[in-house]
Image 1: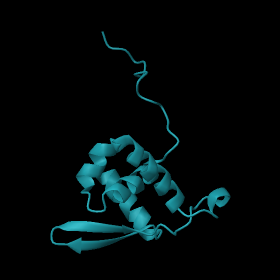
Image 2: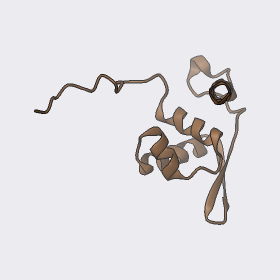
Image 3: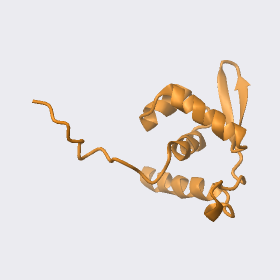
Image 4: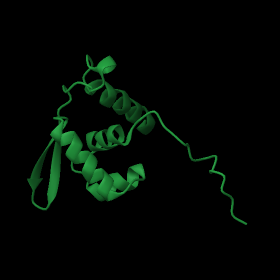
Length: 106
């Protein structure tokens, strides 16, 4: 018997957007493939491609083609877009999660 109730282990919302999650995955691995990012976050490759284009267009990252792969370079000095956080560089978010990753791997 199937239930229409949501799985309690799956959150209905999160604090980080998919854009933030893609940015963080690229910060972790600048040579990550779109497929790898999609699997890690749990979204489609098409959505990751759209988000990468958004981040590129907004100046948060640049892409360089090296062989058959893209290499991404983040502009960590780019400021958040929302007015209440516009005085902060995106580096603050990346640093926070990079620090967490370092502690997790220790």
